[in-house]
Image 1: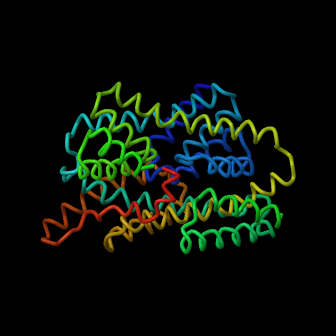
Image 2: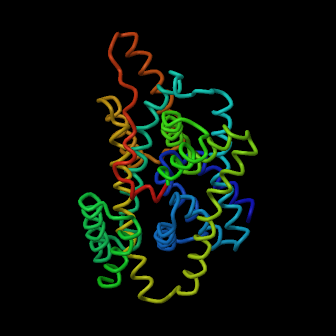
Image 3: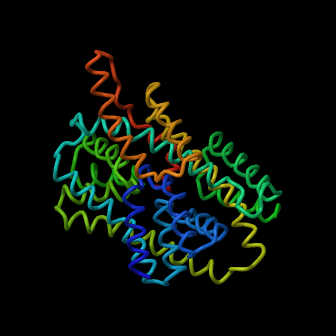
Length: 176
Length: 177
């Protein structure tokens, strides 16, 4: 179990470009396929992960590890998620002292960054999908409504993410 | 978090210059993983090699880890309470907004020209309509980036490969790096 968690998050950590948002659909796919969490449980987990500071994907890894295998599960999942970053950074730092001047690095980032953006857009769409069994329902419409209002608050008033989540949570209590 | 790291490293500890840390942070955003963890690993590695990188990463991870564990314990205590479940459902809407915001922010410095715009659109379309693992898309992006730049340069076209990082315009959102 611990080994499964560790290896899964190593795989996820390796592709978590763009600060982790991009891999939320991948984590969801992996944990629901293995039967560790249902889609609804996963969405709850991500909502909880948003309450703590730091990368949402890493926090979600900690939560999933804890839910499926207790404290040690949480520790190995977090370690799995962070280890690839650490190795990649150390390798890159050792290879190029001043990576930024390297034109190969620059040109590969030129291609990588739009793909990351695409992955994050997909993550947002994927998270907004109605879950398989419910279809288009009141809950789904209300969720999209909440996200629209939150997006407006973010753009217009630049509210702190925690405040946004509190507003969304309060709206949930009222609406659902 | 990044402004705090910058202040500590540049002003207090005097480990590096301001332009150096700017460069380091923009690279940290391009490697896999959270920007905060990556920046910590890079600074740690520069100052004290592999051991430095490991300790810096552990230092930056531990507080968050403990907070998340605390949240998990509370979540399990209050599970199955209808009010808590409703709040979590509402927070999903908030998360969608936060992810969309992140997408918008990344788009502002990754979409530089028509080629990169097409790359982003194709990525979304492929993910939505074909079940291809994202890893392959990432590798394709890396290779295509290098190829396109070489071709454009050979054709004598001007290519702008990066934009100045836009971090800082929404400091509040740096909660999640």
